[in-house]
Length: 313
Image (cartoon, rainbow, N blue to C red; front, side, top):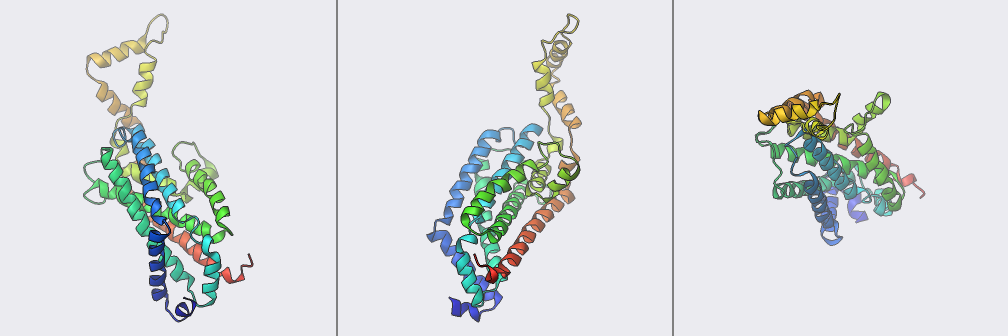
């Protein structure tokens, strides 16, 4: 292998390593990432599938869960792939290995793996009878738009894990780092925690922010009803004020006039978010940022491994 790589160009080396990774998928059980991804998708759809893309609460919870699932898949795909063969890379680099070819092969292979995981996730969603919007924003099919988004989220997270795997010393360190990466993505997604100032700016560096906003936009969050307002009113229906129950009176009036759907739509209109607007340009921007994160992480991986010959570890 060392003599072969020494005289091969970058494209030829990319093909060689891509073939190696595909063989590893079959013979070293890397295929186990697919059933693991199916389990994650099944859990997510089981919990939020009924209300996903039906109510605003269901959509934002489902988008968060889907984004977390994709990030988890991406992290696990490549968090150990470089550090577990660091000695081999060092030896082959001294014999003529181009690091750009090595990382390019990883990018192609991981993209294929992420695509397979995305297909599995969408199949699980169909089996769970998730109600996707009828019309897409970018393409004619919202399912395709959603699939592209899930693929980009998974791939961007995958490349971030590849970057960590290229920077750390051992597979053990990489696995210890992964929970902190995941927590960072969850906290700074901007979905459930009120962030301001510098903390709010950090969200722009996360995969979770752009992934969630893209899913909510494609899922038409702003066009859906909100149920929290009504549920709160209903729970307070027996509250007394000066011996009267004004909330009960209002609740009864809504039921008597069959106005519940009108109330839910009205509350949804009051809870619209600019970041979740169903705007094709907005979704394309989110996709572009996810791709930028992926390629930036890959670039850092290349730079880190170009110095591997000086690594005395």
